[in-house]
Length: 339
Ligand code: ADP
Ligand code: MG
Image 1 (tube, rainbow, N blue to C red):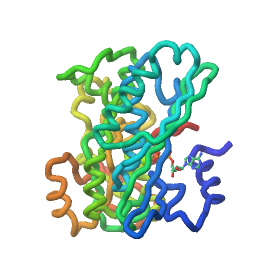
Image 2 (spheres, protein in one colour; image 1 turned 90 degrees about the vertical axis):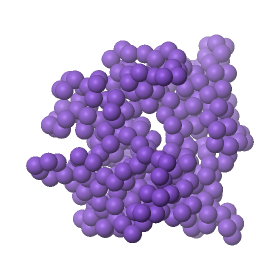
Image 3 (tube, rainbow, N blue to C red; image 1 turned 135 degrees about the vertical axis):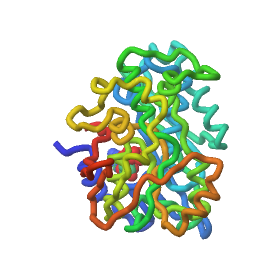
């Protein structure tokens, strides 16, 4: 049986079409709209007990997350989100218990924040589990959508925000911690849980990077840094070097990780925090590459946002190095995969 990524590659080979600028293989497809504008479009499927657990979250947070994951893909194109379609399949008992109303409340709250209009969807009944399909479309200036494929050797690699928090939240949930309400001043533990349950897309940063052509390539961090950087490098036919001491590990993580037991992957000897930051999924930060000449323009344009330089693009195709204090390691992609 193929892996998830082999499966997508197989479909991709059958999908070439002349009207499509960028099809399968990026965070969104890019389609020519008119003389000034390109359309970007993305879809995400969320399946109960695979992508979320009902007893871990609230309907409003799930609605928020269903939109946030797609907004994150639009942000990764440097585009502005505009329209959405949302389809839900739910079992009858869920239909009757008020879940759907709360789910849409959370969805609309986030949609209104970014001016996204719901323009359609579908509803069906499932025998047992909830299934959600989220589609978001947006616009980029003609030929300005930021693809995964534009990184060049010598470019610097940047990441927004912090890493590993969402995976930390997932670990807490797996260990039995729960979050009942959205606190105004959350504790560290609540912050980690919220990063997992109610992630925020980097829509503003994405729009600025796109509008000012500040990045050569961009992807959002959904599977995990090691995997998503590997996707970006594969599409750009380049390699990368990451500086471990520059990675913005989530501050809240350190307080809740046991040195050994909490590791995502005990086969390596990285610290638990570093392991979460490199291989933990769903942070929904933006990872992007930029020409060194653009660094001061980037700092200026993003001065009110949190982002930092974490590495550089190299010529060695698909080789990703992790520079630690005393050694250099090859970093294998160990982020999330469904199959
Ligand atoms: P992301 O994490 O950014 O949402 P995915 O890893 O889900 O991206 O998908 C990577 C690429 O493969 C995207 O361009 C997506 O549209 C495409 N893709 C994923 N699954 C399928 C599928 N079943 N059919 C066609 N394209 C797919
Ligand atoms: Mg993505």
